[in-house]
Image 1 (cartoon, one colour):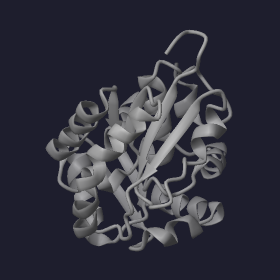
Image 2 (tube, rainbow, N blue to C red):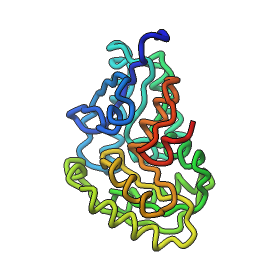
Image 3 (cartoon, rainbow, N blue to C red):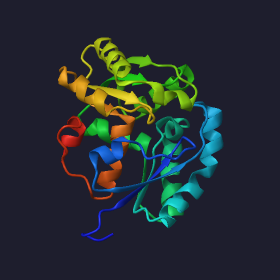
Length: 239
């Protein structure tokens, strides 16, 4: 990677289709993105365990295609067995790819700390069993959960059908239920959240961190390619 050539960011994504999340080129149009799908069908611990067996090969494949950094762009996929497992996944990606690595679960922690959050309102796509795992992961990193709203989706194929209007509505409900929350976290990398972040923050909400925005921001920083990006939410305005 030279100063003249923008870095290439490799993304290991849960759906089989292996598409680059739309937030990535929207915020960083000058960067090149590659994706490799794992074939996750359900947001459930048994299916997470099945597809994590393919993470190492996915990381190696992205490096072979030219990725300069590689990240796992699935939040529940990386937090479902706790912080140590998340760290082990990142280490596996780094080992198999030979590249700097991250996970979306690590990204949300770094993003929440970047906006000085401690007390959270939370909106997720998950059912209750996965929500409990997320709560334990966040609390283990020193955050408190003031409210949690959930869309209770199991099938990965249904996540893309959640629109901005619903996300804004449910996000406002989570904020209103969490008196004094200093950030809203929207967890699930498959939710498309750029527009809802803009709308929620325009209405005077606390900073909004989402899996998708945090994951993209974190990998751009890891690649040394992040500069402040006004217009995409407060997270992207941080140098």
